[in-house]
Amino acid sequence: MFGNTRTRFGLSCALAVAGMTQTATADWNSFWHPHRVAYHRNNAWPQPFTEDSVRQATAPFEVMKHNGWRMYNTVGNELFREGDGALMVAGRNRVVWIASQAPADRRVVYVLRGASPAETDARVASVRETLATVQIAGPPPQIMITEIEPTTTSGAWVTQINRDWMEVLPEPRLPSTSPTGAAGATEN
Image (tube, rainbow, N blue to C red; front, side):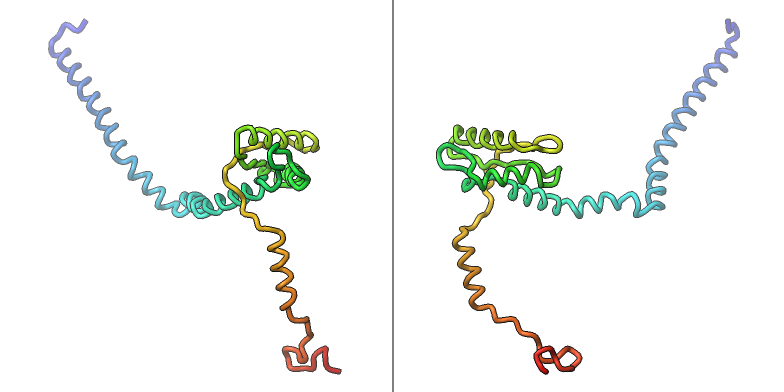
């Protein structure tokens, strides 16, 4: 087809140059691409970074909120009967509140692990029975087993502190003068 040697040589040189041009162009674009990205990122600053900054600043508080809800929604030892793992009245009330009143994204019942696997299973079964009696809008709450015991205080101790505080609390009195210096409510 191409009988002439000069034509073949010319054609092969043209193809070689065309191939090198594409390679050089690809290398040129790949070299400048990061610089273009940096230029546009700098011109748009701080917009591309504000979402990440907000997320990083609020992440610890989200963990604290989750841990607080987990502690509040944990059904602890004092809410189950000893031995058989049945919920007492206060425990049933707590489970009903979690299922019906807690925010929808926080409706998870955490059951404190019992002394044995059988006791833990009995506790979970008791919580399931209680949830079956509650009319719930939306999906039923999850039941999770936890080892983290919520901090509690004896009711007798709290009552004693409250009574001691009430004994030393001064009687309320209206001031004899107002902040402007005028006669107060106690003087006639």
